[in-house]
Length: 233
Image (tube, rainbow, N blue to C red):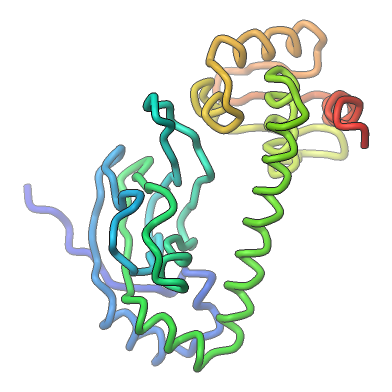
């Protein structure tokens, strides 16, 4: 059965929300469009490509690998997001690899064309600056956690981060779908076994509860206190 034709549209890309319809249409014509299957690599660390990528459909994961081959997750980018801006801005090799988490459609724009957009549209430049600021803040927090927290506490901190993104009340969060143990382990540089043990301990303390298709955090405040006590906040 032939693949469905990709309809080239950048309408949902948050970075480009300030552009007019005509400007987005012109950019759509300038982009290269490609489908990627789940687990397929999109860009490789240290590759010489300089394009910026827009996630039109699906979700991707930004990762690095240790010398032993251990995967370290740096972040996920969903529909409407972008990635690859660092190489597009500074011309250096890629700082991380990116793979599709699910069937994904991306549009790529050359660095020269991207830099022209930044020169012509201050609102796009501001968006990029704010995005890079968030990356720096998250990286700083992660470095501090890796330097000061034990593996158990890093799992607590990651669950707290996920909870804050999925609040379902003043002191409750619903994580749906249920976070995969290996994904949490990759984010906080520990093992799946450690993640499983920490989740079991939190479940026994009634801080979390697993349902059929969701992980319920019953007491976000308690989880936050556990992290703050160790961080010394």
